[in-house]
Amino acid sequence: MTDVTTTSDAAGDGTFDVAKVRADFPILERESHGRPIVFLDSAASSQKPRAVIEAMDRYYETINANVHRGVYEIAEAATNAMEAARVRVGRFIGAPKPATEVIFTKNATESLNLVARSWGAANLGPGDAVVLTQLEHHANIVPWFQLQAEKGFEIRWIPLTPDARLDLTDIDRLLDGAKLLALTAMSNVTGTLTPVRELTERAHAAGALVSLDACQYVPHLATDVAALGVDFASFSAHKMLGPTGLGVLWGREELLDAMPPFLGGGGMILNVTLDGFTPADLPAKFEAGTPPIAETIGLHAAIDYLDALGMAAVREHEVSVTAYAMRTLTERFGEQLTIHGPSEPAARGGVLSMALEGVHPHDLSQVLDQHAVCVRPGHHCAKPLMAVLGVGATARASFYVYNDTDDVDALADALGEAASFFTF
Amino acid sequence: MPGLEDLYREIILDHYRNPRNRGELETPPAVRTEGFNPLCGDEIVVYLDVDDDGTVRDIRIGGTGCSISQSSASMMSAAVKGKTIDEVRALTRSFKSMMSVHESTLDAEGEGSESDGADAEPAADVPLGDLEALRGVVKFPVRIKCATLAWNTLLQAADEATAD
Image (cartoon, rainbow over all chains, first blue to last red; front, side, top):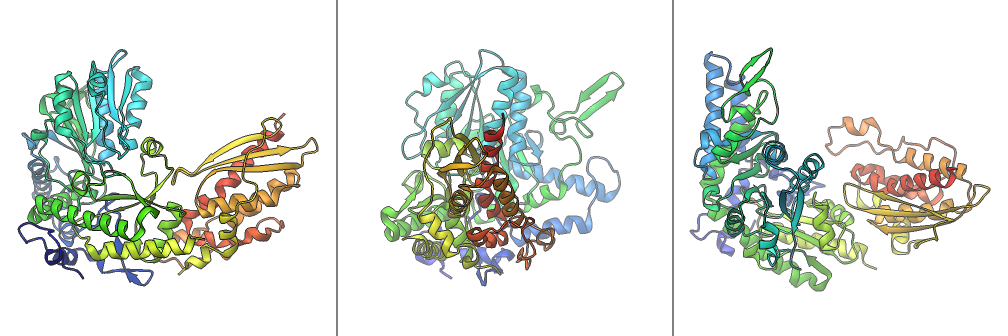
């Protein structure tokens, strides 16, 4: 295995040891089709380190109980563990008030729907406008279409440059009179990093709030929601070494306080009578029903793990692997391979959406699978973006803390096999 | 464990490289239907021209897709030309029966399933000919939708062509 710390500038302080990281992920020990697995689909869902798996096991084995209800010892312990996770999550993203501003949801999609269904339904109507970008994932598009059908506001789109960056030429006109800018911090297709801070300043100047889809951002770059200036941020645990079944919505306290509840049920009420109900205070107001308790504990462990690596080192490592991948693949395949999105590794995340001439992404990914290389073919839940890129599908490879240059070499070799299999 | 040769048989690659009946037909008299694979964004367009006796006079295929969806559409177009709509429907049933995933596949916990769909014999006694080459797709469950996309689109076209 290549030790990136000696072959690249993976970590500026020389402490990022990818071999050591890899040893923490049990699944990387397995084989697929008789070869060591090369996992390049972390943008869809990351793998989990032993520390996360064990933290969740430990919860089930020692303090499993429902939260916020029982007064017995293990119920108190479970509640404390979940609330500790909430504060940990908030601190990780720079939330000014972590204990009240961090809402646990079932995934980032639910977080984005919560913003639309609660804030949007209460604040949008005819004559209003919501501004989206053409980079968005369906989860940050469809809820707005659904709400638009009921509320009749306008949806405007920030267009893209040819290399899939936001084209801000008309941004002032687009934001004029808008009530919300809802955008991704990093595209799950092209890896494009958007200028969140600049756009937030412009949106606020125009009187619009900003809802950030941070799914591909929080796992990979140090995040400070207060410094970015956004009003809402949504992300999911499973893309940042944590478990599935848990999403996060962070929102500014005064906004969340003023918003109506989203889902109704147990846990989210202060009082219920035969005449109606009074919602609970934050964060319970937005957490109806039994929450994913073990998952919050798993996320806590995932954040501890990421923090121990250091998010700056994580980012540096990923830029290094991405740069190596773009260089290697371009040298080897030249014009035959298109990598969508910004060509400068520092302007993008470790997400490579590829088109290999003459090989459909679905076929490409199938051949890669035979070489134990896990990539994702398809439209990546961003069909409007695919239409702008002029493709129906791409094959996407994405990198994370456990990927190294060996993985890139395996990808390149498998791409070569696919090219010779289908070229005629 | 299924290998690539189970999926990409030579005749499949031949139809992918040299698709039969590509193009468009004038509508009317032909009908035009579109099919989408929501998983991969593939799109198939079927132009079907059925004469007054209910026989397929001509068929053309448009759209984009992977080797499995394109070769399936190509072989389909060759197979249905000159057949009656009833024969087309019977052939479609046979093909989709061959493509059906059996529960045994799903019971295997997704871990290198040994089930190879060999028991998925065609329901009807309609010979599938070259289309048999697509049988291996069953071993790759995610790709089944690729293989059946053209056929579902054809069924829509057949319904439209005979709806009067």
